[in-house]
Every structure is written in C-alpha cells, then in structure tokens.
Image (cartoon, rainbow, N blue to C red; front, side, top):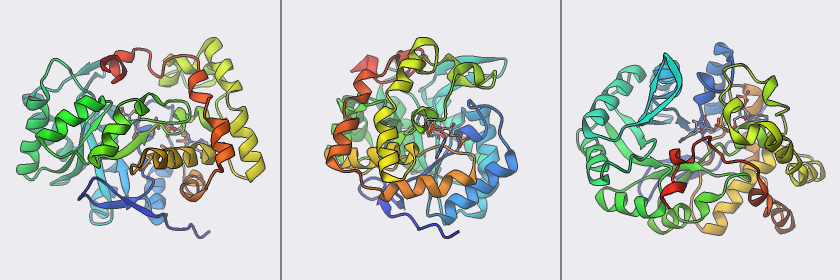
Length: 337
Ligand SMILES: NC(=O)c1ccc[n+]([C@@H]2O[C@H](COP(=O)([O-])OP(=O)(O)OC[C@H]3O[C@@H](n4cnc5c(N)ncnc54)[C@H](OP(=O)(O)O)[C@@H]3O)[C@@H](O)[C@H]2O)c1
C-alpha cells in the first residue's frame, strides 16, 4: 500500500521541519496494556516511511525502557527524524502509581545524561520539562535546560502542561520550540491561556492524547475490559458513570465519520489540526499507536478537512465531558491558571 507522505510543519520559529503529525511512543512500553514488541518496532519504521518524523518519548515511560526500546531505531535513522524526550516525572518501580515532580538543576543534569545513555545518542533534538514544579523558579529549571543547549546535549527546549504565563516567563529565559499539552475534542482547557501564548510567541503546539487516550476512537468499551495495569482504569473519564456518559458524547463524531466514510480517530485528529487554524498556531499532534495498521489511518487525517458545520457539531463536546482528565489535576497546568 502506498501511504501519502505527510505535509510538514516547523517546530518553533527556527526549529526543524517535521511531518505535521508525530508518533507518541509511550504506549509501546507503558500504561495501555501489553505490547507486541516486534510490531511496535515495525510501527516506528512504518511511521517514518509515512512521513512521520517527530518521535515522542520520556524518561518516565516504562521507567526508562521506552527510551531503550526506541534507541536502536533512533540511531539507525538519526538524520531522518526528530527525537523528543522529557524529564521531571519521577517514578518508583516498586510503587507504580507514585508520581513525583522534579525540576531542580541537579536532577535535570543527571536526567539528561541518563536519557542520552539509554537512547545511545549524543544529543536530544527536543528536550521537554514534562511537568512544572512551582516550588522551583523557572529561572533555575529553564536556566539549567539552557545550559544543556550550550553544552551541546540538547538542541531545543520544550515544556509540557504549563500555563500561558509560565510559557511567556520561560521563553524570556530561553526560546521554547514546542509546548506539549493535552488537546483534543475532549480536552480543551489549553485554549484558555497556553494556546494563545504559544500562538503569540511562535511556539509550536504538540497536542498529546489527541485521541483522548483512545476514547475518541470509539474502541473503548469498559474499564473492566482493560488490562489490570492499564492506567485508564484509574482515570475519571474512563470509569463508572462517567465512561457511559462520555460514550454518548461520541455521537457527533460517529455521525460525521459515517457521512464522510472515515473513522472516528480521523475525525478527532482532523479537529485538532483545524482548531489550531482558529488560534493561528502550528500544531503537530502525536497520536500514540503500537500498530502499523493504524498509521495510514492516522496520517490520512492530517489532510482531512471538516466542514464548518461539522466543526460546529463538535464544538460543545468538551464542555460536556464527565470527569477530569487526570485523577489529580494538580498534575496539570489547570490548577495554576
Ligand atoms: N506530555 C505528557 O504529559 C503526555 C501525557 C500523555 C501522553 N503523552 C504523549 O502523547 C502520546 C499520545 O498520547 P496517548 O498515547 O496518551 O493517547 P492518544 O494518542 O490519544 O491515544 C492512544 C490510544 O489510541 C489507540 N489508537 C491509536 N490510533 C488508533 C486508531 N486509528 N484507531 C483506534 N485506536 C487507535 C492506541 O492503541 P494502539 O497502540 O493499540 O493503536 C492507544 O490506546 C503518547 O504516546 C506520549 O508520547 C504525553
């Protein structure tokens, strides 16, 4: 099958051009149940063939194993792809639900070296602060990240789940190429301050979980059917009465998908691309998949155009979603806005 090559978009004002959709690699090692490792590795190659060039991981995914998993692929294709990884989320293997947030300079310096070692590369193209610890001034955290740029360990900087004010403050310390936060038909809090600030500064927006962690694809049935260690079993939108109520909200996506002869996932991804046009900024969503079979479907969505009437039908959905997007919203920028 010939897969049309993706259009490209620029990460930040002087950053690299990447395929306008990236690939989230997290699920290949963590959070969403068992993975077929050979299929996951084949998905990386297939993504590159389809024009996907931004590959997203983090030191926290699989306790470092996600970086190790994609390392050989990264090294084999170093000049053809853009490598993004992250620090700041501290985890404990003997307590999988534990999450700490670390932004202190000593932690950052150790984290980058550990990521470089696991990935087996000399330089990270895009290094994100995964979460903000408000107790650490941005002058210290972003200032330390800027040191990593000067040391040649990192090419460009990114942030995740920060407010518009935090993005502006960070940008004044060092240019920020990308802001990665959750943005989808189901999750639009970023449109309040983060998206306008990114648009104003010329920061590319990298929407994570653009498929609502799979909910927007229509494939989710019930939390009880997920693997015992699937993190969605603990997420408010996927559990109890919220899950049933949220499933009802898929009706307009389903209708549009049927009318247009596309899938729900494609409608959800097309929405993110077109919503960015409204705000006047570059977006590079990173849908996560471990399967080659999803790639053509997901990349085709980047050029699907929804009509104004279809977009209007999707407009009220986010406001009706039951449950927060995380069990503890202090883990996001929302509490600091
Ligand atoms: N910065 C942050 O704090 C943060 C947080 C979460 C995620 N992320 C990043 O964002 C990436 C994407 O987010 P995500 O993985 O949480 O959620 P997502 O992209 O919204 O959804 C991923 C889920 O959808 C399924 N899926 C993908 N394409 C599909 C299709 N066409 N049809 C049906 N199901 C499909 C995947 O299953 P299969 O794998 O089985 O296809 C997976 O279960 C992650 O991989 C990670 O790199 C960042």
